[in-house]
Image 1 (tube, rainbow, N blue to C red):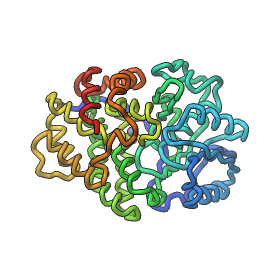
Image 2 (cartoon, protein in one colour):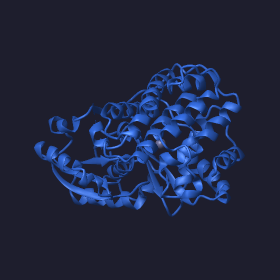
Image 3 (cartoon, helix red, strand yellow):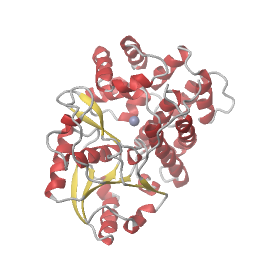
Length: 394
Ligand SMILES: [Zn+2]
């Protein structure tokens, strides 16, 4: 399979990357004087001192702040609406997201709904969404990422859950939801516990493995995807083993950032649709954990279908298996990395997932995130989706 030679690459995000770079936030040109700082509802952002450091930087830059501290994992539509109301009440001219993917994604929704009327779901383009165009430009967003997983600091989409309709789907607004500034400081990631470091790292990895086998892979997406797979694949286990290993953290953070670019110039595939259905039904399932659970069966399906064999070999090599010759070597390398990171035996049943749910989940994946199926290297039927879930069940 040859990559498409045409691509569209537009990333309007100024990125500061490197350990300690949060200390340079106050030197940056910021998009206003009043900000809503969005953090998770957990205690870690405060306990680790990240919130105080960020507020001090903003104060040095002459910015006054209000704090919104109610974002949950797999953020909910109502939380986005509450944050948007808080941004309006505070007269915020921009939003600062300080946290992981959930915080950054929720902040994108808040930026959109702070300036637009109605409900967030009016603007969702998929499932039961109202498909309305976003009339008013969202507030600018500064993203300070404390995890290496979603790539949300450098892409223009966010993933929000609507529990009333059991939909977990994406919001977009052209290039207007890209952060204007991304701060990627791996020092802020050293406090992430090992299991979450692994879940997030695999999310970053799959953003690129999906892109690399996609029917929409292009000259540019191949470059960033392979570099992302190398950086995450070769340094994730060391990062999980020792969260304070800063050189390894930096490489995983770099790989994650590249994977974010991959999603902009390339695409994900239906592995993400299938996972979103799992965590739409089981809110407590971390996105990365769900991806890990289905990954071996998912990629094996396309290998057995004869899709892009040379690309699977190349990905196995990028993961560090220099002697790889067969497409199935990718599955071997992937399983080895999962075992090295202590996540080789995640079980759906531990999260209360039941096989009886698989047909509804397969339909949910196609309804809510159907747009990714078109990027698969071969068409995936509803029966194929159910078979992938079943093969992944433990
Ligand atoms: Zn993801």
